[in-house]
Image 1 (cartoon, rainbow, N blue to C red):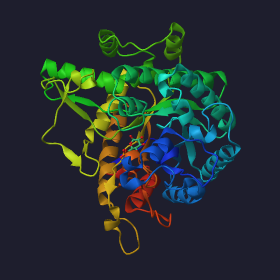
Image 2: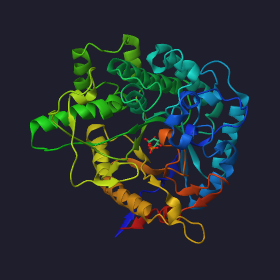
Image 3: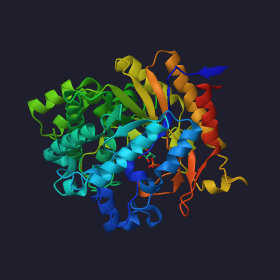
Image 4: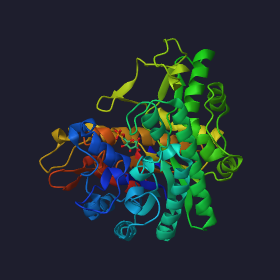
Amino acid sequence: MKHQFPKDFWWGAAASGPQTEGRLPNDSKGASIWDHWYQTNPEKFFQGQGPNRTTQVITHFQEDLNSMEEIGFNSFRTSIQWSRLMPEGRGAVDQAAVAFYHRYFDEMLARGIEPFVNLYHFDMPMALQNEGGWLNRETVTAFAEYAQVCFDLFGDKVNHWFTQNEPIVPVEMGYLYQQHYPAVVDLAQAVQVGYHEALASALAIQKFRRSGCKGTIGIILNLTPTYPKDPQNPADQSAAVIADAFFNRSFLDPAVKGTFPKELVEIVDDLGIRPVTTAEDLAVIRNNTVDLLGVNYYQPRRVQQKHSPKQAMQPMPEDYFDAYDWPDKKINPYRGWEIYEKGIYDTLINLRDNYNNIPCFISENGMGVEDEERFKNEEGVIEDAYRIQFVKDHLAYVHQAIQEGAHCLGYHMWAATDNWSWLNAFKNRYGFISIDLDTQKRTIKRSGYWFKEVIRENGFDA
Ligand code: BG6
């Protein structure tokens, strides 16, 4: 049986500015929170590798794009680094950055690769972080101004814009679980940060619409379908509803419906931590929902009713549910994430049924594997059969969801090339294209050749 995908399906992969661009000595880029954190705490980064030396796309983008062209991508997502374009986060625009992004997008277009451009991938400019970052309402205004600058500069080249990638991540990792700067633990701050991110996205969408830009604007969310331990048990079920409200609907609802989930509003009211807002700002959120939704899918979340004693002194999302460790789960041992292919189908069906079947696409899905060098053949090609299997198994479910009416327009893998990954740096490799970090040589992996066939056929044999 052949899994045939709809005509004009988007095939490609994703990356982000901070994970690929790298720095040049004495370049004019401003510091982001990552540059700052690396300077103050290099020991936090795997093998001490920081964001200044990534895959050096700033000088090697042509090689990356050549490989993507060879595979046959018709689209590719990356992000503009706010701190590269506007080193202080607001005000002056750096002309070297403008020239770089123009060239980068031009070279994509010249190869028939549609640039999908995201504006924020966890990379707050340090100058704004020093004023409170997302805790500060002024940052929301600065973000909307930065978005406007991007639309004005690159609007004629870019058809698909995204305001943010995974806005829940700066909330969880920066303000609850200490994996991103500023690494504080404070639910009240986390709520304010999340609210400001949602508002910033809506304000950028308002700017986009008012400036009459062509194309679409959306957001990219990491949706983790949430399963109760026992679906028949009402207490497990409500635990799943709350976890879903915290980690999915917190951004999905405002982005697509312009509202916040009532379960979450009740919790923050109960705790007395409702974010500071105005009626005018709430109207901006209500009236500026997305055209297109990017869905990053890696793993599900499994929960059960709260049995365990409260761990932290302060309020935490985990006060409302316990994690459930499903004994039958399959795991990617390198990243420690569960692999559950059907989750991608459940997510698309949820969007079909509960989110007005909003146009969407899989904007990330993938598998990070350590030490892939061991799978290199005599020609230097990495034989990553596990990645082919992973993508195939997920694509089969995407195909099924489309057959059942889901409005899914494409599939992007994480990532195009191996790239630098936050605290894990280069520990796990994700790309269709491997990179030798010493020589910066790019080589397509077996999965990349397999994907080439899938793109050529617009499908694959199941
Ligand atoms: C996504 C992010 O959550 O997952 C990427 O958008 C990230 O930035 C990717 O790199 C894989 O996760 P990690 O932590 O293994 O790099």
